[in-house]
Image (tube, rainbow, N blue to C red):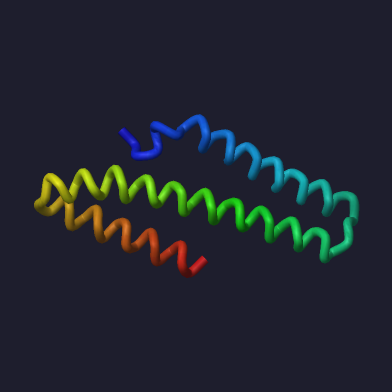
Length: 93
């Protein structure tokens, strides 16, 4: 079971809002909106995606990584390494 399963409905709603933001960006470009206005909306969509990813990461750490750590062994090491790599990707983006 995925760590985010409990909040799946909220996550889906959040992603739909982000999808709406991206569609809005497409409309802005199609309508030749002012560049700065488009960039402002890009920033908003980027921030929304970052917030979503941080929420998902928090749930992963609290559920998947914590469960593996309780069990111990190589799976725990693998989950910690996997989480560290995910954090590194988020920091670079």
